[in-house]
Image 1: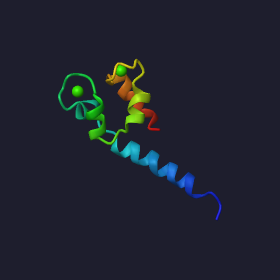
Image 2: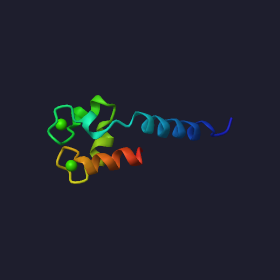
Image 3: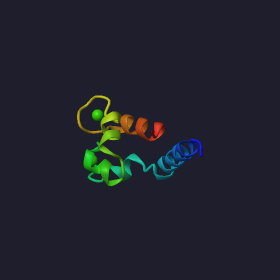
Image 4: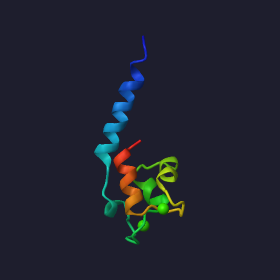
Length: 74
Ligand SMILES: [Ca+2]
Ligand SMILES: [Ca+2]
């Protein structure tokens, strides 16, 4: 039993992130042009990821910030 599982898990997570990647418009359910934390959570984006993606720390994700989030998927 060596450490095969973590690598497999990483692949799974990366695949899942890509597969689920919704568009900005889909996540921005109230159409105010920004993604709030609750909107992000609704599509499975954790608070941790959200905070990491919020580059200007204004508490919402704009399209660029959201794009970074979905592209890196980590
Ligand atoms: Ca919104
Ligand atoms: Ca922001």
